[in-house]
Image (cartoon, rainbow, N blue to C red):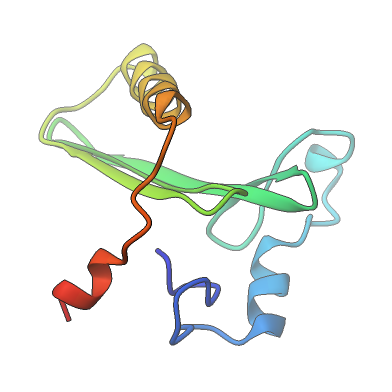
Length: 115
């Protein structure tokens, strides 16, 4: 997730491609909404950037959630169960709460340890 838009080089996509996939579509459904579905991502503008996320499930077997936050965090959650809408919402709220409760993040880069 950190390489999709180049937050962590190398970027998978060119900046113009990223702008395209997160742009608000000109469909009436998304006009006036605080968020929208771009090209593969739900997008909510926040403080000059945006949160992006995508979730999905396979009938009766799995649920996944991938989030990229406006302030530089990303997380993924995978479950081997078919969720209710309430379960998906609870997972999302719980991960946001956990991230928001961290008062100090490590300053060293662990990516270098796992090439």
